[in-house]
Image 1 (cartoon, rainbow, N blue to C red):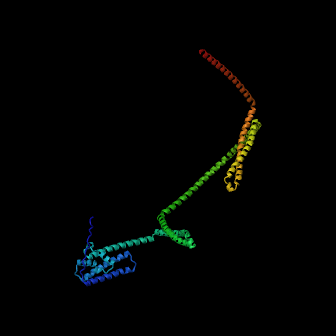
Image 2: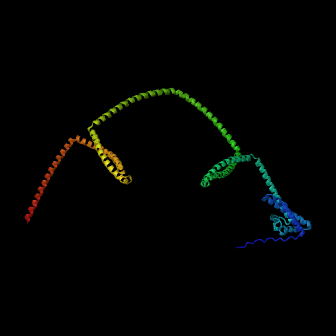
Image 3: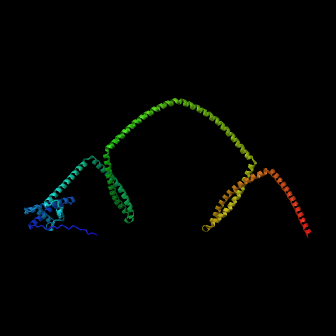
Length: 470
């Protein structure tokens, strides 16, 4: 790495002055320091005031030193005086007794490097610095004047008044609201927080937490509400004042539109009234014919309804007579009677039997179930469960048996009646079946006899042939 070369510090020789001149210079520097910095030490220090005092001290002290050197040596040239001032400012023997800020001010006013001077000699350098300070002072004065003018403009501007009033009103309103809300919320939160140590503080933590929470919440709420009201109210007031002409024009425009809409509504109402009057006249003209037509249509409808009612009554009477005749015929039908009797008998018989079996089976099952908790109920669960099981079994058995007997008895009764009513056909069928079976038996007997004869002849022939050969 390349080594960084630093520029050597410029060496300043000690001033070649007599002891009397050095004492006079020290005394002058001390008096000027007290003169320019005494009031600054008594008041509150500010960076701007301290900088201005330091520059003024350095310029005045250097000017006094130049005048003093010219007084003691009137024939000294500008270069000699410049060298003497340069050596004096950077000599600890002459300025070392001054405060640090005074030394820095002097050495900033007269740089160690002569190349940084604004002129070749000290008087030209001081004049150039004074001119520069004058320009800076003029710039500061101009800035202050502009600030003053702008301040006056803002102070007399109605828009500024509106913004300030709006911001103040919003800050007051929202600040009060935020303070109240924050106090309530903080008190509630503080009371809740004080519940935890309430047992240890004998309940004193509840009001203490409420007071502390209410105070903190009130402060925070008031601050937040004030800031929000200040910003929101100022922005609203500024926007309203900035666009007040447009807002006024818009209000006037809306008012004009409302008036025009009102006039148009009145015109429309008059037109509608005229149309309604014309419609009322035409309606009155057509009302007579319409009423007569409605009267004729009503009379015709009444006649038709009367005829239709008579026809419907006659049809209903005939249907009722037909249904009564069919019901009577069904009741007198022997097949229906036999079926009904069989269904009723089967339902009663099988239902009773099913109820009995259900009672026995349910009682047995209930008693068996009651054996499990018998040890804990001292045997009482057995008869209770048997009674419950018997009742449930009897109900289920009766229902199942009744249903089965009803269906089965009806089927048996219907079948028995059909068999009884067709007994002659059944007898003839049985006689024909027996006759056919007799004929078939005779034919089978004859066939068997014929096959037996044929078999005997065949065997006899076979036996006769075998004996002759032997």
